[in-house]
Length: 370
Image (tube, rainbow, N blue to C red; front, side, top):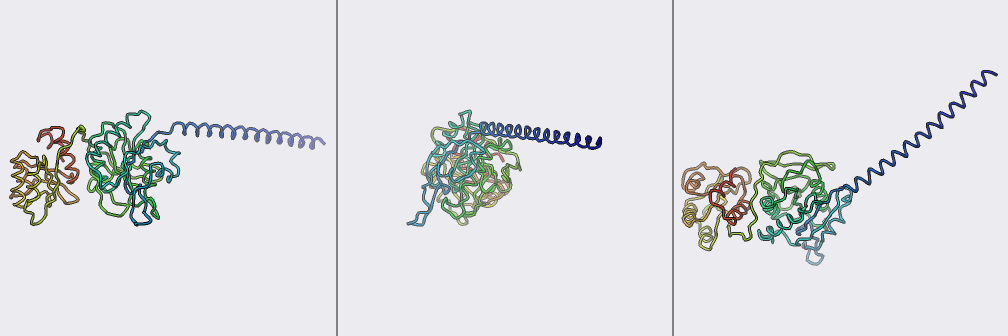
């Protein structure tokens, strides 16, 4: 009998312990749920605001059913509606700047775009800006803004190689990654970048390398700044170049000419005689031209026109190696500026901005230091 009482008491105590455990567990779960809910509210309330400035390009185009060609029909709002999950990483503000193919872009348009982006970034609530832009001249546009923007907040140029009506459009993923980059602590000091297909390129060195492939942008020997994967920016390199120059009211006339075998210099002379204030010559190899072009460059320099020598070669830089007429060493001696590894289109923009700001030849040459 005594044994039965002990067993009964043990049974009662066990029930009380189980009940107590259940009650405690329920309280803990309830508290945990409450904490998680609070955390969710806080995260949502603390989301950064990213501005998207739209300019047009393939990313905002669909195929015309009648002609079969891509035409601009997609608004900024339409672009965002095609991207699930944006509301979980940022609040979005859309500014529709233009709706043109990037083949129609001009330095004057980029000048106005630079002013608009700086204006947007003055808002303390704005973490950074994503610029949607056509890929054909994106590398130049990004470089122009990298040189002229006053704000140090992140600016990401993004676009697409496939139209919005494509079987597998790349635009939505590119925009998502660009917004992720703007909000990432790892990417706050990259300057202006061109970010497509998960790769982050510095505006200073990026080039478009393929007419149709989604992996079209790279930075040659300079390498990528980063790579975006699994919702995170993986930093690969630091930003090397951070040159800044004042945005002028009016832009000087600067002509870019690519030289070729058998070039007689006619195009260069015509540019000089029709009012060009500056010339960028894309030479061969490490920055060389033939004797005929060399003579015309001498003529341009005698007219006080600044001449910059770039190379049409994708990788490598311009160097003062060859001392014959037309060689890089000889061109530098007579007063031409060597562009380093800056490609012709970007060298043109840098020279244009330098001349427009009234910089001396020596000051402009300093901007081209390798």
